[in-house]
Image (cartoon, rainbow, N blue to C red; front, side, top):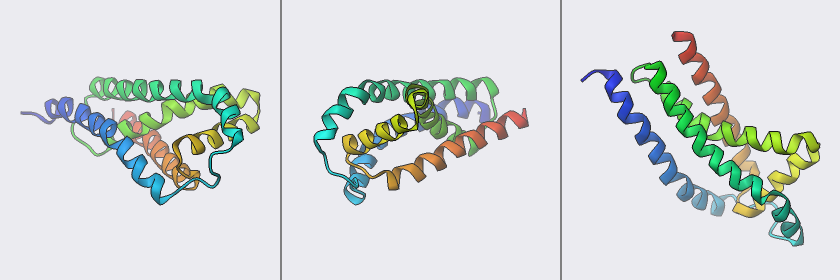
Length: 151
């Protein structure tokens, strides 16, 4: 079997592993990296303001994953580790783009408020998540550029 045929099976498996492992890893890391601030009365205000964006961001993560699969299938790059970068990267980049589009036009303070809500909602510190999201998003951009350049 050719490596191109293998790609069509490995990509969905990577996405399925991400979908399964992400909630488990979030729970483990939330215990190791608790939020700076506990739930407060601000949480209800932030919840009413940002919960819809958070729910839509989950849908956008799914859309990013599906788009990554289509992108990889369309490029047919063969088996390469850059595929993992694209899959993980697009799963992070799509919801980040949505959050940016929904919050930044109202000012940087809304961007910060959303992430304060996110931290309280998931009970995990952004001191841990921000570097992870930056790394994975950057990896997604670099992986996409590398595979486009190779074409």
